[in-house]
Structures are given as structure tokens and as C-alpha cells.
Image (tube, rainbow, N blue to C red):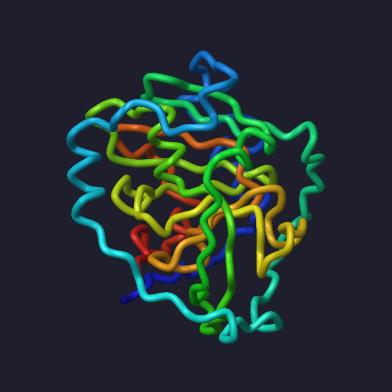
Amino acid sequence: MNLILPKHTLSRRRLLQLSGLSGMGLLLGGCELNLLSDSVNKISEPLNQSLEALLLSQKPVGEFPLSAIEPDKLLINTFDFTPQIDPAQFRLRIDGEVNNPMQLSMGDIQKLPLTLMVIRHICVEGWAAIVQWGGVRLQDLVALVQPKSDVRYVYFKSADGYYESWDIASAIHPQTLMAYQKNGQPLSADNGAPIRLASPIKLGYKQSKWVTQITFVSKLLPIKGYWEDQGYEWFAGL
């Protein structure tokens, strides 16, 4: 995989100001929100046929035993600040081109089936670490909000202004998690608490921390991702 590195690297805060994302939602953030209640204990209606076909075609990536975990090798990349989010007040907003937009508390999310996986996290900077992540599969959240049939992409907005976009096939991969545990413990603030992306099929810069909003769209917006908008590869698959 080849990365196109930018000649000049903007500061994180300056790029967010230029992109218009600092302090505001994504372009599709105005959809009506519904708070999930009793239906959070189950995955509701069937997905549309195109997403069902993607699910059937996907294969898991090989995982590692618990003994292979490397607790000291997962480095912390920090920028302007580390958001300190009160889990009791936190709400994950899921919206865009979906039939059932909603907001979920951490209590709602933790009522969904817990998935644990021990995978290798690979950073574009050249280091890697074997980590156990625990959380809810993103495909389970997809099943709840029911994206429209022409949805192809997913945007992730973070509490620090970071933003990312994924293709829908990668988002609903069975090992793509919205993780709230690391190595059997609650996720720490510097690792992205209360919830972050984790997956063995993407490089580390695609795995957003402190995720507050997930937005489903049929077309990519002019902005694609914090690092991608500086020249990094968009797909960043492994």
C-alpha cells in the first residue's frame, strides 16, 4: 500500500478550522433524533438486501490468543487535547440516510451483545501492537438504524473535532467494533473513551477515538478524513 504524504502538514486545529468541522456537526447532522428504548436489547429489522449480501460475503481476519496481547506497545498519539467525556452524559448520535436515527447512551450500547477480539493494531508510522478490544459490532448498530438502500459510506465525528469516513462494507465487517473496553478493562480517556472504532482491516488513523456521531451517506462529501484531506490514502485497508 502506498501513501501520498503531504508536502506541508497543517496543525490539527488549523485544518479543522479550514474544513468547517470545528464546533459543528457533519453536513447531514440535522436529521430528527430518536432515543432508543426497549428495542436496544435486540437487533431489530432485517437489513436491506445489498447490506445483507455484503454481510454474507465477508470473512473474519485471524485473531490471536490472550497470551499474545502486548499491553505496552499500543502507543498514545495525542494532538491538541484529550477530551474528558462524562460517560453518564454521553450520547452517541447515529443519523444521516437512515430509517431510524437515534441517540444511544453508554447504558444502551452496553446492553447490546459484547464482542471481544484480540487483533493487531497497525499504525502508518510503522509500529504495531496486539490488543484485545471489547465492544458492540458496528453492524449491530447498522441493523438498528436501518440505512437506506443506496448508502455507501459512513462518517465518524469525534469529540476533539477529528473526522473520518469509511466504505459501508468495511463498516459492517464482523470485526469492526465500537469499542469501550481495552484488554479487559474500561477504555481510558487517552485511548478514546467512552467509545472508539477498532478493526483489524484498517490502519490506525482510520480508527477514530472519542466518537460522538456516526452518519450514513450515499456519496462521499468533499471532506473525507482528517489525514486523508492532507494527502493520506482514503481506503487504508489491511
